Length: 437
Image 1: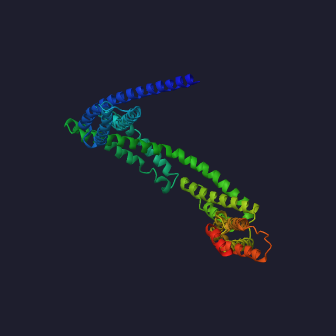
Image 2 (image 1 turned 60 degrees about the horizontal axis):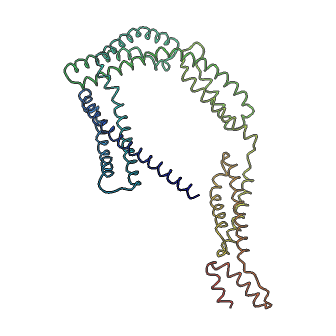
Image 3 (image 1 turned 180 degrees about the vertical axis):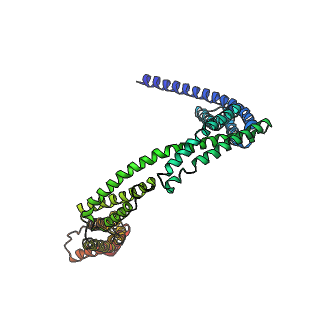
């Protein structure tokens, strides 16, 4: 058996040694890789700064500074691993793990910051191609302007100003954006030719964004007609649903909340534009849907209430009175026998008193009356438990009366019981002994 455990220990030691060797190799390789990465990133910053300007490369320069600072710790730890002072395996393991951690962090930071600049650097390198694409896309957008104007004019005959405000200026906005994109592209080309790369890049970014926004505006004009038709179709369905809901809610019209919601929904239906007039289906749909959902909510609540009758205020007050009586009795018993009462009874009473303070504000509102009844019952239960636990503590703490045959001794036992309720258990034995012996 001893030979077995010896072999097992040797195997474990060999396994740990192999793991430590691998960790040391990883730490050294990671340091070399990050050091090379820092040098490469420094070259990239130089190029990016020349192409993009100082401000655009600030985040990467800050990241490089932080990485260089933290890598000094990694190099210092590696130096400690190879100095003349012997190290324990645990010390070497801890240092190498920290080196790997620092290198992983450095890689993550540099990955994040260089990726943020990658697209912009690539765009700078392809600036002539990008400028040409901006011009091409601007021309393509320009061909869509006449159709957008026709769409807007056609929709204006069907929908009112409120509905048309979302797209009425769409063709003009797109025209302005296209012109601005071309102007920015020209500025970018001139600035780059003059060696003003930072300004050239800013103008190029502006041109690209203007083209994107112009396309989005024209897409919105073209999509609006379809969306409006869908809104009209949905509005028709919601109107039918609302009228059905009003009929279904009549049996609950005596409930104030339901009556109010019915009135609001009827008003929303009455405000719908008559057939043949210009409309705003989006606004009408939103208003009607909100009123419809409000009625659905109060009807569901009223039907649920009908299935679960609301307790009367009198029932709640009876429960509160019972809770008050239970608390009063428990409080008096505990106060009169403090030396014998343990933590359980005191905790139940404290919780009952806390809940009792919340009940009054819950009684009057209908929404919380059920909660008030539940809290009152829980309060009474806790107070009852406090009383039972207190009585248990009192019974268990009473000294056993020994039948010594003398009335004085029995009287002494009774006095001992009374004193036990007044004096803490920690000093009970010593004092009672002095009094009665």
